[in-house]
Image 1 (tube, rainbow, N blue to C red):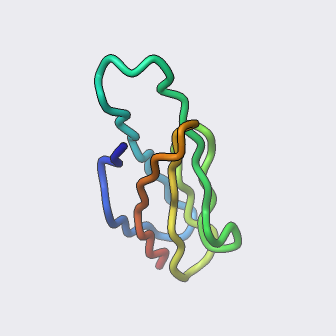
Image 2 (image 1 turned 60 degrees about the horizontal axis):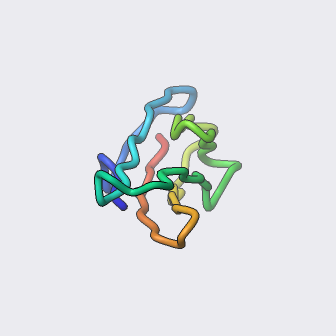
Image 3 (image 1 turned 135 degrees about the horizontal axis):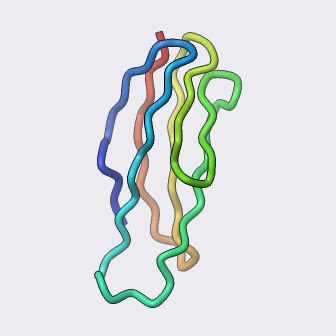
Length: 77
């Protein structure tokens, strides 16, 4: 389990999509869920689209159904 970025900087109102990669390539269940540690600062949808809400710092976490995780530190300016 990995994300395409470990850190991300966004302006308020800007967005970027994080891409989760589930390994191995032949894994049968590649479903992931995204979560923001601070939804008042940055939101994330089920497709990994992060939107800056207000200035601050948040961590976007992604988790597989079998418990593997990865995260990205997001700074909103």
